Image (cartoon, rainbow over all chains, first blue to last red; front, side, top):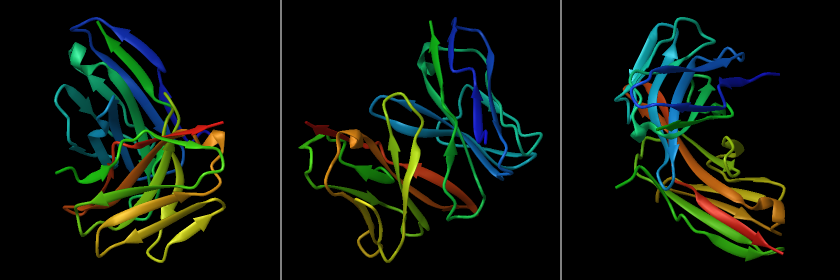
Amino acid sequence: NAGVTQTPKFQVLKTGQSMTLQCAQDMNHEYMSWYRQDPGMGLRLIHYSVGAGITDQGEVPNGYNVSRSTTEDFPLRLLSAAPSQTSVYFCASSYGTGKSEAFFGQGTRLTVV
Amino acid sequence: RKEVEQDPGPFNVPEGATVAFNCTYSNSASQSFFWYRQDCRKEPKLLMSVYSSGNEDGRFTAQLNRASQYISLLIRDSKLSDSATYLCVVRGTTSGTYKYIFGTGTRLKVLA
């Protein structure tokens, strides 16, 4: 029962480096999303997808790219890391209909130095 | 104004106490409502969905008031293990897509 799997759990990057956070789900969920969580700010939506081949921007998309080539995978790319991107990142998935709960991955703790 | 607002707390209560959290939301077209629990440095996990008629799960009771646009969570007989942050979550449509909007969370500390 894997659910939502995120990798890596921890990462330290230097300013300007790029990297990809991986997210995979095995529940055949249509809806997948990425959030960042900062102290006092709650969870903020970065990008989301309602199905393979369809992505859209959330509240804080700048500096991040996503793609959804399969139903299962939704990677988040940091193009050129900045200290302001130091945060905890969560991937979540759910069915597309309104009453479905969201399931979260275990999170990635990213530090940009 | 934030779309989902919660009192950040912390609420410090003794074991066995009853504690209530409220949450207000601004989008009257919101369709689904949830309470999530988040332990320090962990992922949020569903505590309970909130239904229009109100619902109960053991020591936890959730209520929804659509007219006033608020959701509540009542915890009875608090346990030390209830210490966590409780997130109010609202799901509604924007241009046909159902997005989750999270409150910033209410911290609860249950004291021995």
